[in-house]
Length: 352
Image 1 (cartoon, rainbow, N blue to C red):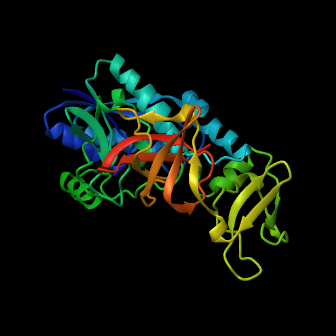
Image 2 (tube, rainbow, N blue to C red):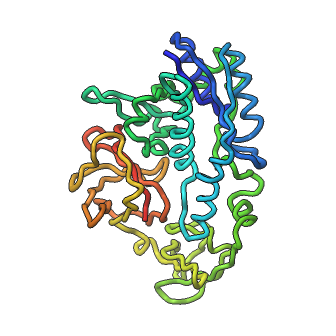
Image 3 (cartoon, rainbow, N blue to C red):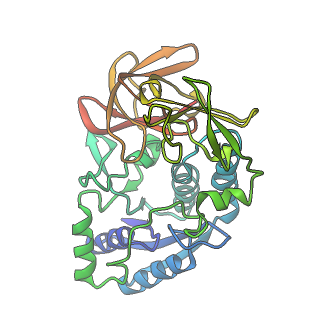
């Protein structure tokens, strides 16, 4: 089988490539050049591209670099900037997977005649009733099924995830045993196009007309202070907000960009049971989502799985949680899992 392996320059994709070679496949390494600016983290820096190329040399496989910087800017970076300008909190890694890695890259690999596309994600492809399904990786701490939850069935059928059956320590042990240069390389933690020394504040501050905002306690109407950039405040946020008059922690419950006002309240008033989704963003990994039936929903990459029901509405559905949870910011992704088989991903949607 001819397999293209997306090599980010990290240990997971390096070991994934090695496992494919060991299995006897015809393997070609592919690295995406995505960010045209300066980067020192994630999978976009020049050193990451070099690491991927050198690992490919170690494994004796061909390696190609595809330049998708313009597409990445249009599909991932600019929507990230625009989302914050409009009071949303987009997830750029999810959008990169959706539009770049598993749309543009897979399309190119198909045109080049590859049978499958492989990645180093910690997730699995499993069969249920003869149909390939996306499932959680065996390592709960590293599971990446959430950021792949938007993949359609046609993509899942062409996908190979070699390290999904391994935990992270096993991946590093295998890399050390093989002698891969990426064996001890730290995991990427941040958004790849944001430098660690500037952070989200610095990146967006250079690209948006960020404005200070006034923090108001919703319960008392009293002013509590201010924030330096109202566009960077997230619904449900606690960090940097401080405490109310009674010393209780306060959470962001409202962001008004017209008045540059942040409303905060106690935790009991920062919970919700009903999540509205954008109908146009709903995807399924196979069958239609089960309406009026219990499912499991995850609201962040490593968030606690929550039981919920999908309640039909005019033109779409709402996600109704069994137990109230902290507010989820508009623009965030919801991943849906099968309640009878909690490892199986059913699909995803974006919070309205």
